[in-house]
Length: 137
Image (cartoon, rainbow, N blue to C red; front, side, top):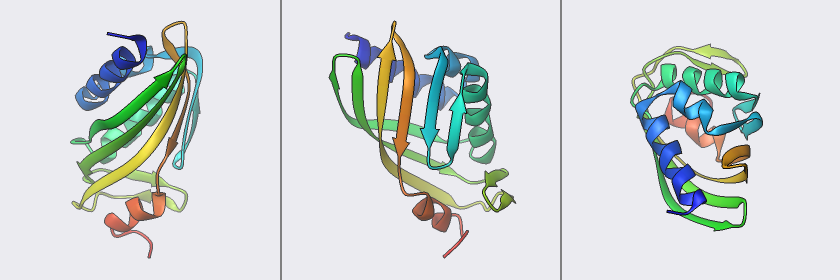
């Protein structure tokens, strides 16, 4: 298995198991993970950001639908399916669980260094996500 496939496989397993330690260990110590929901720098911040999302959707399941790699850069498409049952931090404040299911479809870019994720950029429509939860218009 090549490096990119291995990292994506481990990422999906750690996310879906909601294992913060395993998930954070995939990242370089000084990594940055940026998404429309915010930016986390360093393993501890990345672990905490993931834990906040898992509290909001304990059944969150990520799947990589397509991916390609060129050297140390990995491009991927993903889905994240779950149910909003816990508190979700938003720019307008915390929103309690709505019980609504959601599906996020998006894409991302990983930059790998020394076998770990040095940088990640996630791209998806946060408005579409929040509308599925009954937040916003």
